[in-house]
Amino acid sequence: MATDPAFAATERWFLKRGLPHFIDDYSITRDVLTRAVPFLTFVALFEVVNAPSEEFPLWLSAVAIVAGFGILLTPFVITNRLRGRPTFARPISIGPVEVGLFVFVPALIPVAFGGQWRSALVTIITNIVILALTYIVLSYGVFPMMRWAAGETLHELNAVVGLFVRALPLLVLFVTFTFLQNEAWQITASLHGVFYLIVLLVFPMVGLLFAALRLRREVGALADFESWGVVIDRVQGTPAEPLADTTARPPHDPPPLSRRQWGNVSLVVLFSQGLQIFFISVLVFLFLVSFGTIVCTEEIVTSFIGEPPHVLATLDLWDRQMIVSEELLRVAGFLAVFSGFYFGVSVLTDDTYRVEFLQEIVEELRRSLAVRTVYLAAGDAATLPPT
Image (tube, rainbow, N blue to C red):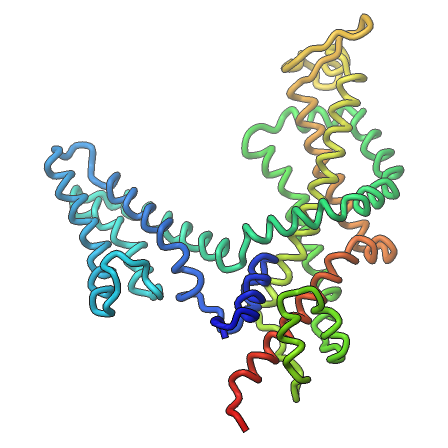
């Protein structure tokens, strides 16, 4: 199927929209991890180079590095030679053996040359985390998803701003009232480092959980099979159009989405809407910083927090000295994150807002599911024996 231009173009279309799991027979070992080989190899070699103890003489460090390189590369070289492929060609499949080499070989060097067990344990944990993140990023097409979602956000900018303006009066009333209370300034000024980040992340995490529960019902209805005529209409203008022209209606409905495909669809929806909410939060942050710079002089900020603020910049305009302080940025950031949370919950609980907010992404998902239906039907037809 992949050799057919229409099938190949359709699969690239899925990839560009962050839906790689819609591709038939999408394999983790063959289609995901093989693309990560250059990056994972660089990480492993870097760890091997830095594995020997600093107390080692130069010659012993060189021996340890060469040994590590040999253990890492030998299995790939032998496998390629047995398969008649170029010596250092990228492997066509990554299995448990290759994954084990990446996780454990760099950790063996500090143990074998110096008995650095703690360093070895840190290396193993680090490699497992890197491998998991690499799998998520590549398997679910995070980078193509980001490009597609950014394009959709720009395309829907008028609609998003319109929704924001409609929700603005109550939001501005609450945010402005809270912004001018000294408690908000005192709380954010007392939070530093990781504690401030934790507070900022609370609202997005709760909002993400809420959205995931709400969107599951919204998106679930999209998986119902539509009439073949509607499916054909939806794939017009996509790479699957030639497949639809040569494929008859399948005798059965397409298979339901697997767990990974559901996860893929959910990530696309959540990421797309999250990007729009992030845009709203940025607007609120800029508004609060501008408003606070004009209204909150150094004396006022001092009265809010009980001590002189950390002034980052000053501006003299019409005999008024305005300041941008660290405390202003802190409280503006906190209220901007809360505003994004409020806006996201509002558009998902209000029927009118929800329809407008999700309309574009819902239509794109319907098109993607229609393309998947035609793609699978054409694949089934291509594999049937001739009559």
